[in-house]
Length: 226
Ligand code: C5P
Image 1 (cartoon, rainbow, N blue to C red):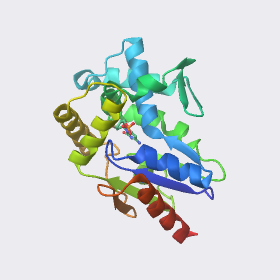
Image 2 (tube, rainbow, N blue to C red; image 1 turned 60 degrees about the vertical axis):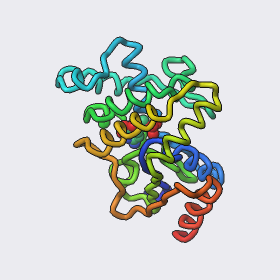
Image 3 (cartoon, rainbow, N blue to C red; image 1 turned 90 degrees about the vertical axis):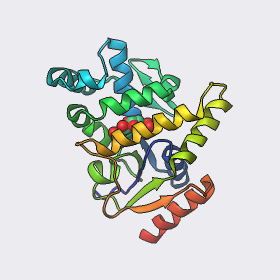
Image 4 (cartoon, rainbow, N blue to C red; image 1 turned 90 degrees about the horizontal axis):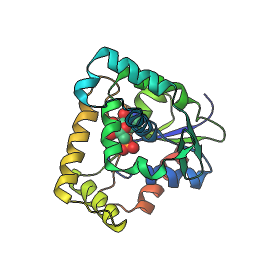
């Protein structure tokens, strides 16, 4: 419990991943991208032919199977890369479809329970920066610094659009905005570990901040805690 944790939670495409990675590298801390774990479950399910539709996941037997799949996830992280059953899935994980599947499987309580220990095991000295939806509310409730990162849906869709286009991936802004709003709604309204700020979280709206300014803000808060 003495190992410090900085939690960065917030909606999809708010820039949590970039912010968390920058803060971790500045402080020399470990990094947990918890969304990647849910994306991995979605991907593994797809590969095993296990459906991730909301309708199928409502069936308790199917939810149970998804939880079992999450519990035996064969995953390995190396710097900048993620491996599923020995295969490099770094790129596949970033696809929009992987994010949508992650959002559906992550509403299953058996899946969340299966990933708990895996997440707690990222906590090593000298410290951890963890990003996700429930880092501050469920996984590390005692963390000394919890940041809730937001930006308007339009800003987030624009950023995602820019990112995809720059990678040469065709994308339609209106579709991205609609997907993102659907994902926000599902993440915020689910029964288990819904996306919301922890009571003791500090809010950071980065709609009009660049990454350096956001990093500086978090580091200031962190140094204020020491
Ligand atoms: O952050 P990222 O977009 O990679 O997360 C993918 C999905 O995984 C989210 O939409 C959310 O439904 C789920 N997730 C979660 N809890 C976390 C991290 C991600 O439910 N801690």
